[in-house]
Structures are given as C-alpha cells and as structure tokens.
Image (cartoon, rainbow, N blue to C red; front, side):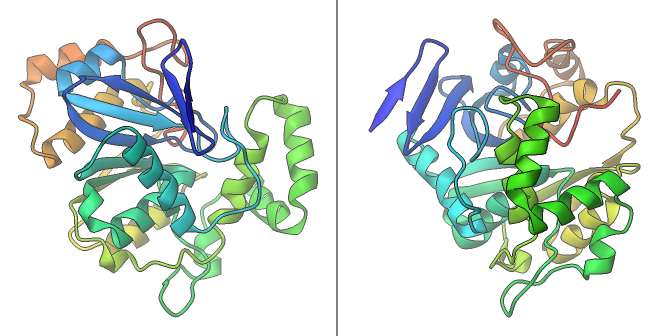
Amino acid sequence: MSTSTADGTTTTSGIAYRVQGAADGVPVVALHGTPGSRFSGTPARDALNALGLRVLTFDRPGYGDTPGGEPRTARELAQDILDVLEHAGVEGPAGILAAGGATPGALALAALHPERVGALTLVWPLAPSSGDAGSPAMEPHEWVRGMEEQQRMLHAVALQDPVFLRDQLELGLGAHAGAEGIVLDLLQVQEPWGVDPADVRCPVDVWWGTDSAVSPAAHAVWLSDHLTGAQVREHAQEEHQWHVRRLVEVFAQLAERLGVEPLSAQELAAASAAVDTDGCGGGRIGGCACGAGGCGA
C-alpha cells in the first residue's frame, strides 16, 4: 500500500520518500545523516536538473514520517533502499550517497546487491565498531579516538539506556527532531554490520572533514583501506559553509561515476549557485546539507 501527499512525498512499506530533479535523469538515492530527513542533504532542484540526476530521498527509520521501532541490521536497512527503488520504478543500478549514520545500510546494499549500485559516495562516514566472522571492524579504542566527549557519551548511553536517551533528546531538541532516529543510528552503527567492505566492487568516493570530531578522519581512513579502489576526498570542516559550496561538487562527482557527462567549470558554478544557503529547503529548494554529516559554519 502506498500514499502520496501534496509536497510530492510518497509512502510505501511505512517509508516516506520523495523524488526530485530530472524526470529522466540517472537515479540516485541520497540517504541523510544523523539527524536529517527526506528534505535534507540535497542541492536545489535546479542544480539536480543541471546535473542530470533523479534523486530519491527518504526518512530513515525514526525520522520524519517513517516509524522507528527496534534497531535493525545493516541488511534490513539495505532492504529499505531496495523497497524505495522498486516502488519508484528504478530497475537498474543507481547511485547511492550516504552520510554519517546512513553508512551501514548503504555499504550493505553495495556489498550484497552489486547489481543495484552503480557507484557509492560516503560523506563523513562512520566505520563499524563491532565485528564478527564475516564483518570486520575497527578496534574499539580506535573507533572512539578523535571523537568529542559528547559524541562518545551519546554512543555509550544509547547502549546502556536508549529509552532514557530518546526522552532526553526530545526534551532538548523537541518532539519532532528525530530523537528516535538519532538513538537508532547510535545503536545500529555499534552492532556488527554483517558485511565485508571488501565485497563492494563499484566505484567509491569517501568525503571527510579533516577536523571533524563527530565522524573522525580515522573512520574514513579505515573504510577507504577496506574498500577496493576507494577515492578519498578531504576538506576542512571549518571551511566557510563547506556544505553549500561542496554539495553540488559531491553530487557532480557521483554523476560522473554513473556515466553522466561532466559539467564545465562554468556550468558547475551556476549549478552551485542554486544551492539553498539559508535553511533546510522550501519552495523550489531541494534542501540543505543538514544531515549530510552536519552543517558547517
């Protein structure tokens, strides 16, 4: 069963998603980070049209209009992406862009369903912290190294008392800020992902902030070391409004990986000018980069 709303949102299997950009463009699924929603983490619609991309975004579990529930495995999170692709009529491979807490599901999809992923982009990713026989992970002491104290505390409290943490986040952030989704992300990333990054064979780009204390550089380095042929692209997090100036560049690079003809420097600059610079979307604006790893200054 599916439903549609006036703002272009469709709901299928409990997942609220929307489609933006060129109607006949190359399909891309953009997965918001922690926190975020289907309205965040994408350039403006005009930019997506210029890039030749048809971009699907959805509220991950516990955010927006998608229910939360119990923590889910990376394989189950990958199935969410497959469900949205199928419902949207995307039959072949698509590009996948994942930020922060969306990393497990995106990586599982690329590893387990290579026929569905043409290229993978990870923005300020998190690496696995708990492994099993078929799922390598960072050493626990390395996983937390470089994280700010508050971030370490959030991960620890999520394991100890997730209900308490959700209630406290709702008190501080508001009832509609995606507190349940935040807690789910904190939990899910600390469980074994059940996949080996070495099984990912598509082109991979890893973007990370050199001074991020939320998603430390060591996570991006670990992932790039375990992903065959991954290209690492670093930037300074404190670069003025990096998410405004770099977001179109991130999507343009993914588009090239998918076979879209590259834009000229002038065309890329024009597309970048269409990015929302003052909030999380409205009207014709597709959204901002909140949820693509965080909003810089």
